[in-house]
Amino acid sequence: MSDTSPRPVRVVVLGGGTAGWMTAAATAKLLPGLAEVHLVESEDIGIVGVGEATLPHIRGFVERLGIDEAAFMKATHATYKLGIDFRDFGSIGTSYIHPFGSFGEPVAGVGFHHYWLELERSGKAGPLDQYSFAVAAAKANRFAPPAMDGSLASSYGYAYQFDATLFGPFMRDFGLANGVTRTEGRVTEVERDSESGDVTALVLENGTRIEGDLFVDCSGFRALLLGDTLDEEWEDWTHWLPCDRAAAMPCAHVREEIEPYTTASAMPAGWRWRIPLQHRIGNGYVFASAFISEDEACEAIIGAAEGTQLADPRVLRFRPGRRSRSWSHNVIGVGLASGFLEPLESTSIYLAQMAITYLVELFPVGGKIDPRDRDEFNRLVDLEYDRVRDFLILHYNATTRDDSEFWDHVRTMEVPDSLAGKMELWREAGRVEKYSNGLFYDASWIAVYVGQGLLPERHDPRAAIPREDQMLAAFGKLRDTIASEVSQMPGHRDYLLRESARL
Ligand code: FAD
Image 1: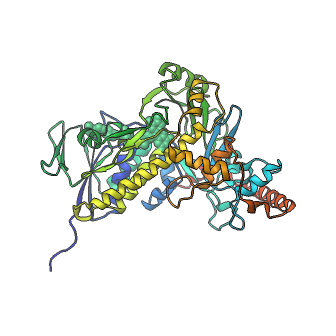
Image 2: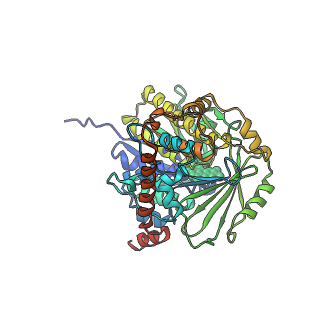
């Protein structure tokens, strides 16, 4: 009897940063017998080594691969993240948390925010974030995993904040244990088939040849395969997202608490992150080089960050945008080789994870690529990038700030038509575009709109049907229940210590 099972596809991953090791580990683990995974990386070239804050989807990745969360967190000195605290974005002196969770619950099919807007008209609603479990827990520096029982304590999600220089090695150990072959060395030549133009092999400096059927370009901003070899165009989005540099600098802890959230504080020419890890705080000033010099930005982050500096600021340069196609011929780009917007809202590792998910779903079993799968992959990836792009631009454009050249520019710049349409829908009727998969659902958009002071002209008229006293009572009860349940959660630091001691 002949064996009819397809031969394993030789998958060659170029690059051993976060994207490379996530791709190699996932394809080896999730496609047993279908993929033979070989990763090439060069320690001389190194990795970007930043990227510390994530989104809740990463939990699905960790779970699906069967990684023990506590072990993973200990190895990467990770903390939990319930959202992002935005300061001074809408106007100086204002702040709001974009939570990983909802605000209240829909009633009679009408979104909670419409009832909130109804009460807000008469100044009786109180701040919107009082109605979010995740915000209340974040502000109290408390953490516990969400309940699974449909109660209020299940109305949130969480992500991780980890040391980016430790995450890659963790995934590498996992990948190697799951059958990934690793070769160290610098790729200096790429061989292609003279007829199809497909990539056939990578050649290293020392002459080693690595042949493959499918190549995954995880070579970071260099984009050796997708960019240099296949010449896939980079769509530059700097005119919408003018921040193109970051000055990153770690500091020691000075506060008693470890906050379960990232802080993003607006700065004169961009914004700065503060990411609490178990052993240190990550800081970075993301800035637009058209408005401030690198030296000035480094001075600014030194001046703004609290705690003993653990290293000098390191400047990273990038150009916001994405490849016109992330899958071309037999090369798929994952991570920075495929696109990068900027660190706001911590979307880059998510975008790598999303590309890996689609790669696994549309994997060319047996090695033959169906052009329809390639087109579908590119369509899905583009959709995700476009949505993230619009959401990030909103943070800059929905502002009244005109106190610096940068903020005046982003306040008055033209935005993509797709975002202009979304903002119009919100302004006119308090509505948020619906979609069923991907990133940033209703609550995220509402958090930013309301948090940055953009209130709609009208809202769903059905929100005026209940009697006001009944609505006020329901709102009060919701606030009290959230406050009472949050007060019973452990402190974030205590929870981390407890989990770590369990190992
Ligand atoms: P890299 O880390 O650059 O890895 C590239 C790999 O390719 C390396 O192993 C290198 O050795 C290898 N390579 C390159 N050329 C060759 C060659 N010729 N031969 C052999 N090997 C080669 N993301 C988030 O999700 N959250 C954040 O908070 C966040 N913050 C960020 C802040 C900044 C300032 C920046 C710039 C990025 C941030 N990101 C963040 C993005 C995140 O860092 C990246 O998505 C992630 O690190 C993946 O990078 P990568 O693996 O694609 O590239």
